[in-house]
Length: 105
Length: 467
Ligand code: FES
Ligand code: FES
Ligand SMILES: [Fe+2]
Image 1 (cartoon, rainbow over the protein chains, first blue to last red):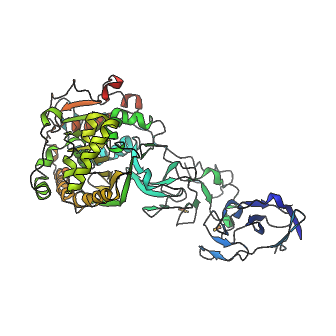
Image 2 (image 1 turned 90 degrees about the vertical axis):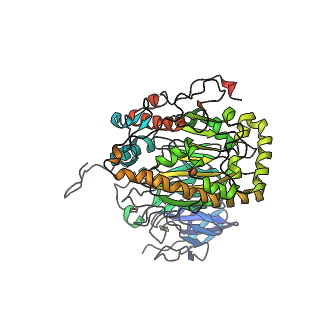
Image 3 (image 1 turned 135 degrees about the vertical axis):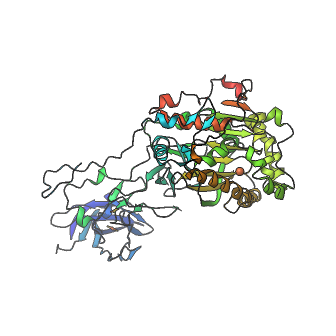
């Protein structure tokens, strides 16, 4: 697992972007206390999800408004051809957020 | 600007700054209105070049009505409308302010918002290539797969062109494409005194109810505008049969016509009223509304003073230059959007006091529908007249013929303690002459200093005199 940031940096309802050496940018958010980590790149047309927002337990892409359920990544309000979002496994260890990021293909 | 051929290396980046056209001067067109002989040349109703000059001189500069605040109460609520022939989105921002945006994508120009109105929009996405704009009009994104890789692409510079200025007066939102235009209140001038008859006769202000009705009429936009600015004369002929059906008698001037009736004009905006308290309200055909109006008029004395309290429901009509009109007491509110010299799109609403009882609001909604909708008793009467007044000018010989706008020459009332240029009697062409004088000022002048200090400016008056 890779360390991303202090868990206090991840604020309820907001999306934080982190750039990690060797991986595409990741995004983090907190919902009802729980932390979620996912790719910053929207699977629809590769715009940045951290420029979107969280609404009703979903990440909303600010560009074409695809909505992804936090956790499952299931897509709603789906632009044509948009796949689900894949969330990363993450943990809050002693005030630091760690996640298992996939290797770049 | 030339497009590059072959290699584009080193070519200049696109300048995506919004463009606000500047005005010119059209003295030949201004002379189509002759103040000395009180005549209007028919070319103002038919000539394509005159029409194009109107779009530039008037509709690209004047403050134009956009929406009522009540139509877009929350963030992301929007309506689509026109300013002249320009398609515009009016949208409430997250901070509660209102922006108006040209409804045309800066990519290939496609119309971005297709629907007439909506609520809680997140933004606007163009159908053609998927460019996405925020509520503020800024470009949010396109397609990252393509544009992220294009080094020359500067997203922050691109957006829907904002209408240069947006402002409200007591619930009515207006916009102008001219960054140099004076404030809305300066543009309205002392006419706000008369607008308050409709907009501020009771605590809580007004709202639009029941949606918009759209229709097309094959007439020049100035015929309906001049009709509402001061043509009560037509009511006694055009609307006689409709009035008889509803009222059981003709349109009534009011017992104190000679003493009370007047026309007032400021910068081409105009109102005529008989100050008979309920004449307009009566034509909706509901006795309950007439009772309501008598009561409202009584209560409004403290707020508006004696004269304006008598005007709330009176036989009356008004136009704000160039193309927004309303009828006090009848509560129809409308905009005449130009669609070429010989066509308009009419959008109309019902305006009521926000604090009026629900039952009263509903009677107004029904009453307006029965009278001033495309199938309404009075609207049908009017439309046909305006269509033929426009269409006959297709005749080459016909359009050389003079028109008469001279009723009430010499009837200016210098004594009356009311703001604006005031004339005696409501049956008078005075406001219409001043409407066309304002039109000529817009044709003539390329700057606001001249526009605001010409013949249509209200004479200075002692401040407190109005009450
Ligand atoms: S890029 Fe995210 S929805 Fe299109
Ligand atoms: S025209 Fe709007 S995205 Fe191309
Ligand atoms: Fe009429």
